[in-house]
Image 1 (tube, rainbow, N blue to C red):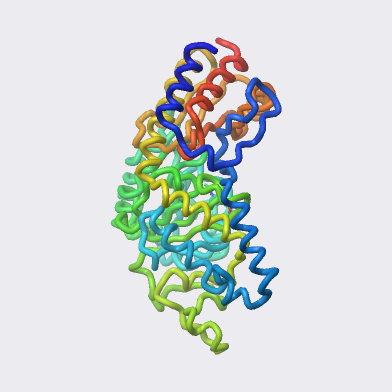
Image 2 (cartoon, rainbow, N blue to C red):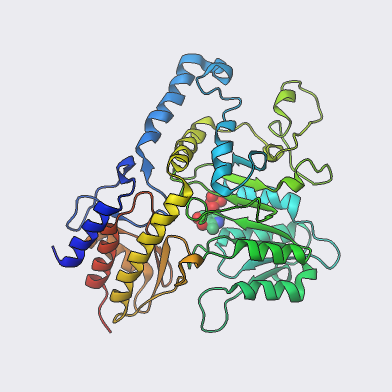
Length: 424
Ligand SMILES: Cc1ncc(COP(=O)(O)O)c(C=O)c1O
């Protein structure tokens, strides 16, 4: 074991995470029994608690049948309410502003039904050029839905020449200059490709000052960085739970709507029987009576077996707390950055994530100068048991997840890159 590897073990002993609470996949290649898992920004690992909790919900169904709606240990009718307070704490919201439902892109559409209302000259939607493609497709289809040309309606903000990430002023200057044509700003809180953490409060303030509605896709931010959506005056936000929230593939997603919009009878919304206030749900009347909470955006009765994993995960976040997680994240990501700097110095590799820890979460993205991202991640996996995430053509993403990643995982990334990528 070389001295750098011993240092990684020493750091792990001094600053342990909660890896023991997760299933870590076995490695197929390399020198270690488990993989070094750096792909939690794509799909988080399975918490050990999830299986038993899910089995308990299944057992209630086998024991009670339909009576489980009221008589299960965690009755199904109000089950989603168990998730509301911990989800609200995670994003800095009030419980009335937060609900767990559906999937991310579906929720973005449901929110745009309410919050993208082009009128007169104010029709444009601002996104970042490197927005996740699903968001691009969503906003383009919203423009078409309103009879608008997506090519002129959707504004894609690009970084300055020679830069990899947007500066806050790139967004706020645009809004100051052209904000009166903008109906909606919809950006990623943490950019999926570069790992850049946007200045959510500053951009939200600039968008609202320009008269636009400001929404955030928090897929890569939730569970990664501290959030204060209510205080930041964000209009709406949506996130998924399968990345840093470790709730399983395709897990249920979350939604935030600021309280100033709650109970607004003029706001268009799509409705179903879960949009009406719980107390009125079984009155079987033809007209809904929605509550003055974000639950008015719910439509269908929720899938209980998908809610269990989100509940278990949120309990873990509550137990550890975002402030402590962020502290460990800063230490771990700083360590990974130091090791990557050594490896990339004499190889065709460039870290494109912002260097200021306040402008990023736990993901570091590396642009590769030679070969394809897919090829590199395949070799990292099969030859070294390191799981990272490729974004073709040339970006590989590494997420040192503060809940379960170790310093030794970070060391393995750098060691594997050094062995796989030839020097200049
Ligand atoms: C930033 C971002 N937005 C949207 C999506 C799409 O999510 P979903 O398939 O859950 O709608 C993803 C998926 O990875 C994402 O990373």
